[in-house]
Length: 145
Length: 145
DNA sequence: CAAATAAATATTGTATACAATATAATTGTA
DNA sequence: TACAATTATATTGTATACAATATTTATTTG
Image (cartoon, rainbow over all chains, first blue to last red):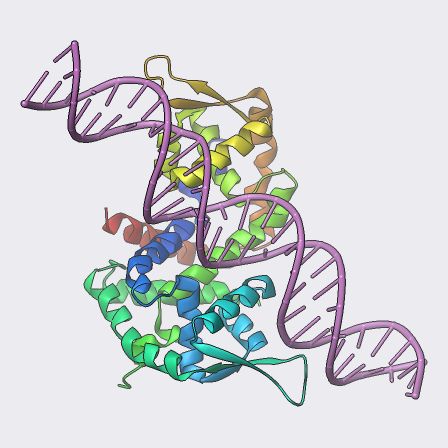
């Protein structure tokens, strides 16, 4: 075993993880562009579509995003008209995100996004491989909490 | 099967991929800080440590990075003194990155980085899981090429 | 050989990310 | 009930990323 073995890029797990993640996001880009969404905005909208109403803090926790990322993100979604931001009357600090009518219309259209991703084979793995991969990634994420 | 099932965040593979990748990089940060390296600079140095000399284009291909990312990246590594940038005499367009003495000294110290990552369980998976995960990620990356 | 193409970088513009710091509102507590 | 700690956001600073565009230097081709 060579002294520098552990320093070789090919022996890292982090690197294919980093590359695969960027690659998938890059493939989402041209598809999401048609809906005027970036990848980060898309995953935020996915949560909002599911919840209809959610506190900014909870959205941040769900997406594992820092306040420094969430703040400008929701401002953009508001500017696009997909959400409105209300204040919680019982706690003035809390901001509540609410899906607008426009945002809800977008949901209908966005149903095509997963279809397009499939058709274009943006994640080119068999269903079985994809399931194993997803489980392992989730195991990894939940391990250190 | 509900109509919006495919739009739920929990049913996406891209999301745990994105979260896991960011999380690992975040855990590298405090460790790499001691060596005055960011994650991207670290993976670039791994390639340079292995090659000693490499063309900028080849480094970009190896790291799957755009010229817009590579350009400022190597400038910073040069500023830190870890590399020098030479011109290929046979082709004036080509820039060749060369490891400096300082860069080589850093390599010796950096051997501790993988050790620290291990000790702190920054990737908290069994060896078997990690191997399966790495293989699947590489399969995914190589699938669309 | 001159003109068109291609290849290697650099730059600009936009959008993330996260750490650190600041601020305002709330809660716990001596 | 003052006051300290906590919570929810926002802002600032630094570093990526990638698309699009520009520039310089080969290379190919008519």
